[in-house]
Image (cartoon, rainbow, N blue to C red; front, side):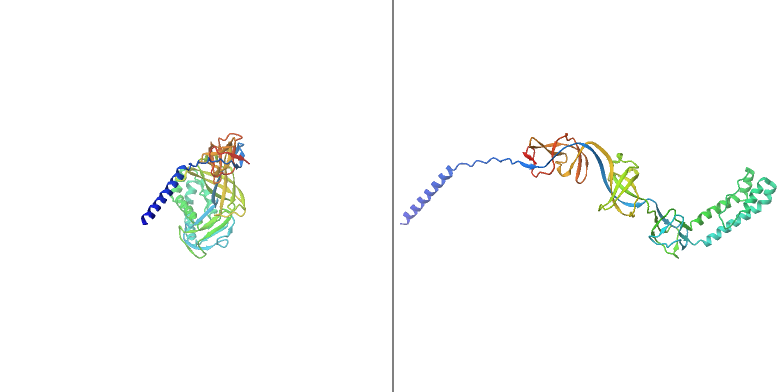
Amino acid sequence: MRKIILIALGGFILLIAFFWSRSIANVEKEQIPSVEKLEKVVFVDTVKNTTIPIVVPATGTLTAKDRLELFAEVEGLFSSSSRDYRPGQKYNQGELLLQINSSEYAASVQSARSNLYNLITSIMPDLRLDYPDSFSKWQNYLNTFDVNKTIAPLPEPSSEQERYFITGRNIMSNYFEIKRMEERLSKFNIRAPFTGILTEALVNKGSLVRPGQKLGEFINPAVYEMEVAVSNNFIDFLETGRKVTLQTLDKTAQYEGTISRINARIDPNTQTVKAFVEVKGENLREGMFLEANLDAREEQNAYKIQRKLLVNESQIYIVEDNKLNLLDINLIYITEREVVVKGIPEGTIILREVLPGAFAGQPVIIN
């Protein structure tokens, strides 16, 4: 009975295997369906080449064009100032910024002037006898001599003999020594060379000032300069006197500047050239960060497109006979968002927006 069951079960399995193999053999191979090329709707522009100005953006910070760093050349106590010597204080031209006590040195200058007066007085008898024609002018010099004032230039000798005589009595050497001392005496008083504002004050009244010590900074708030770095590709198109548009980063204020200077040296690391833009205006402050738009040149027969439309940085998609094709172009100028190109024939239809998955030969429908 067991053998009969096993034989029947084996026969049943073979029968099933037979029909299953035949069904596989009779199945036809499925044909691969052809890919249907879908036409996509695209937005386009028609090229019209024009003259496009090349505007080079640059950024920089403002610095005062007239700036004075105050340093001491003499030693003494800071005694006085015509105004309160503090940051933000305004001084008019000629006003006393800082005075260092010079009483001791001024007394030595007076003593030197007195010695010169005595020397000239001692030669007057000899001048009367040997050089009578020059006696009167030296007498007038003595009459106007004041030890408390800056000495006047010595009378010009009438002859070489007189010059030798004056020089031999050490009058010339004493005169120039006094002029040196008077020049040093003037350095105890520092005056404003222009109307401006004290932006930094590093000493207070009563402080001991030493030679070489920095005392502060003084600027003219009426005129500022901004240093910008320009690519050397455009430096030939910049010139002094050209107008420049400046604006704050938030675009809330706009100013007009002028290119005042252009450096002749190219930075070897960045291949840029420093240009300086002079600007005037209200609400400008030193250290303010501004953006400049430099008009470099005008490009003839050019076209401006969005940078995202570039393919391989040298091609764009055009539409011909309702199909996409690639066109080689020449890049003239590139910014973060836009590019100026040449080489697109007049009237060419190009894509206005990026088409995902685009390829050459793709059929499209123009919106």
